[in-house]
Structures are given as C-alpha cells and as structure tokens.
Length: 229
Image (cartoon, rainbow, N blue to C red):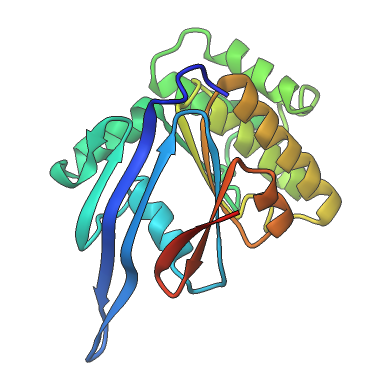
C-alpha cells in the first residue's frame, strides 16, 4: 500500500453509457460513481452483461461515457481527445486481459521489452529480464507465446504490464482462461506486484474468491454499481 493513500488515482461521477443499435437505445451504465485511492485494490464483480467491461473501458479512457465525468491520474478524460487520452495511458496505465494479447512474432523477452523501448529506456533488456525472472520465467526468455502454456503467457502479460512501473493496472478477467491452480499462481503474482509497486489495481472478475483478496469490492447489477462488504 502506498504512503499516499489519500491521493485519488481514479474517480467517476454519474457515468451513463447509452448505445444505439436497433430501434431502441440501450443504456448499459446508469449513473455509476466511484473513487479509488492510490495503491488500493478494487474488484468489480457481477454477472455477464451487467456492464463490468464497459465500465472498465470508460475508466481507462478507452471509451467515453455518454454522460458523466472520469478523472484518471489527475486528468479529466472527457475533455481530452483520443490522442491525449492515449498519452495519459502511456504515462501510467497498464492492462492485463483474459486473452493475454501477446504479440506472437516476439519472444517473451521482446514482448516485455516493447513498452520499455517505446519509452526510450536504454536498459529495456535488463529490466525485462528482471521482470520475467520475478514471475518465474527467467528460463523462458527466448520462447515465443506459442511455446508457452496459458499460465506462462499470462505471467509474461503481467511482467509486461508492470514494465515501467504503472500507477494503475486494469485487469479484465485475468485468470478467466486458466485452470484453478495456474489461476491462483497468477493471482498471487498480481497482488505481490501490486503490493511491491504500490500500483492501484482495478479488477473485473467473476471469481468471488479473487475479489475477496481486494481491499474493496463493487457489484454491477443491470448497469448500476454498489459497494459490497
């Protein structure tokens, strides 16, 4: 947990998301509000179709709300164009997805080096090696994604996400494609890296046990969000 726990990492005020398909508009998010402090781990749970992934995309600035305001790392996203929102994400936001999203033509090491090289770090290779070693893949640096198991690919994705020390990590069903034992290993790494780096963690999951490990839990129900104990 960061020493600056009073510092807000992410806030959303009265978020509404309406999409127009077919004759009737569909409102996916209905007045969602939340505040997340720096270093917190927060789970968003709920049934499929309740709006969890839509909310995650808006909180991360990948999409804009129809109404309401989102502030990410001190920047009000609604006032920014797509390039400016991308710049905010590049400065301190990382993602882990259910389907890993590794580049198949790059080795594990090259996948982790990529965000470091984009930022111009001359020590990208060493930092990426250290990160992969920290997730137990020091002997798999030159393997391509197709040569790695699902659990190993997700560990590469975790190492890549933490490359450069993001201030906030968004994870969408990070253990959803893994068997229970492998999922628990990845889960432990996720919280270990969260603690060590004081990185804010926003996690969308169906897994109640995973959600229970977070500092706070919110439940999405039919487009509304409520904090649960």
